[in-house]
Each structure stands twice: as structure tokens, then as C-alpha cells.
Length: 344
Image 1 (cartoon, one colour):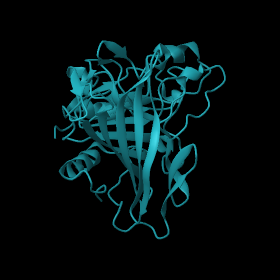
Image 2 (cartoon, rainbow, N blue to C red):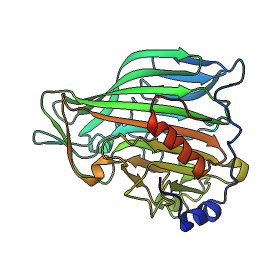
Image 3 (cartoon, rainbow, N blue to C red):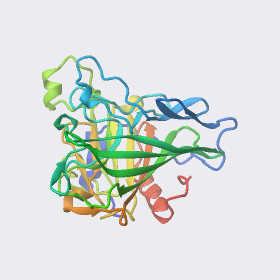
Image 4 (tube, helix red, strand yellow):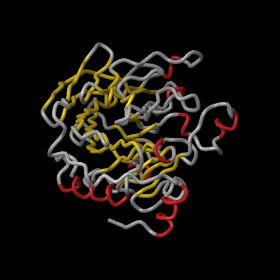
């Protein structure tokens, strides 16, 4: 693990200006009595709750687009809303500045099947999309709850062809609610006998999108709409980088902190060291609350029926901020065993 450098520590203390919330007293081994985990499935969603309060929602069907938004931006097979322990929504679907970004989602921007180019990320191009396929299972245990689902990546804009079948195993861990934690283990397998080539591109992969209120002051859309509410936000990586110095750099974890003091909220995403091309480079947008782990940024690769792409990502959601050394310790323990719960 590379420690935070001096610049990183200064940015953490001054640029973010957020009071640190100490997590040293959290204990997962003795969760509060009665704080039960549950999974509720409807025709449209799967919702994982703790003590009756929603933590993560998976969309089997797309929510309706806001008024004035083209229906081409509808999307299923994504996580939204995701809540902090205090009930703050940390994701957004159909954000006005980028309506194709949807909570926690997965897609490739530049892929090729035979000589057909497909973009499943930028839906306005109408060449591809990702949708919910089927629910494989749901499960509830004393210390966790979750579900297995299949997503389908499809080429559109002509004869539709399924490109990939992506399996998500989502596990939400029981905590004492100082923070939430969930894992996504993903496996992408070619849906045909032909290989899918994922071409080099600076973004694409497992992505997170926060609310439009987290846009920076110099964001183009924010400048055009000064009436919109905004809170300050910035990224921090395990290398001590912010959103500009950390863009296209390898990272074990990325944290997005929005707001100040008691109103702050943090979303941290950890990438497992056994992931393809780990530590994967990350796309950190210079003005938007969006990031992704992008293995395609260092070159093209191929996904086949016999050679699937595997990935594992762990998410922490907290009210307040999470200390870098605490995130380092979480990553180090998880790196040894991706199936273990977060450490005390």
C-alpha cells in the first residue's frame, strides 16, 4: 500500500474541509439486536433493507424518465437509489447533465463484434445498451443479504445481437449502521461463439454516479444553471490524488466526499487486487460526481465464452468522511479474502 503523500494529506484536510468520523468503535461481530437483513422483490425492483430501512435497490425495470428526457435513456440492470445510514441518497438516475449515467452501473463504450462497433454506455448513440436479464436468486442470512442477477449487453440500432451476459452477485453486509457496505462480484461472458473486443478507451467498466447537486462550481452545466443546489465534492484515492491528479491513474480505492461537517457523505469504491489489470486505472471526472474503474484505459482486450472477465468491487457509504488509513485497512483485509465481511 502506498501511503498518502504530503499533498494528499493537505488536500484531505483543506480542500475537502470535512470533519473526520472515527470508525474505531464499529463492531460487525456484535451488531445491534433486531437489526435484521431482508430482501424484498417486486416486478420492478429488488430492495435490500436493514432494520426495515433501504440500503440498496436494484432496478429490474427502468424507472420512468423525467419529463423532457428522451426515453432512449431508460436503463434497467443498475443500482439506484443507494442510501447512507442517515437516509441520504448518494446516487442519481437520469441526472440532467448526463442522463445516460445511472447510479452504479456497468458498460463498455467502445466494443467490436466482427466489424460492428457498439457503445453500450452512451445511449443517445443508439448502438447498444445494457438491460436486466433475469433474477437468479435472492438470499438472506444473519449477517448479510443479497441477490444474483444477470444483465445482458446488447447491440442495437439494427439487428439486435446479445454481446455479453453479465452476472452480478450483490452482497449487502450487516453493520451497526455507522456506515453501509456492499460487494458486487461480476462475471462477463460472451453471449455468442464470437469474441467481443473491448477497445482502448479512457472510460468504461464498473461506474458510480452521484447526485447532480455534487457538480463542482466550474462544471459547464452547473454554470448554466446557477439556481440548482450544490455542495462541494472531491475525490481522494489511496495514492493521495484528487479528481485531477488521480484521473487515469491506478488506484486500490477511490473515495468521493460531498458536503462539509455533519452534512458530509462519503462513497468509497475498492477494487480487488485479483481484478484484471489490477490496480485498475480510474476515470475521475474533473467536474462531475462520477468515476469508474476502467481496465480498457490501458489497451484493448477480448471477452469470450471460454475466457470471461471477472471483477470484484466493495462499496462503503458513510455519513461524514472515512479516514484514508481506515480504508487502507479495509482494502488490505479484503484483498486477502474477497468473501469476508468488512473488518472491525
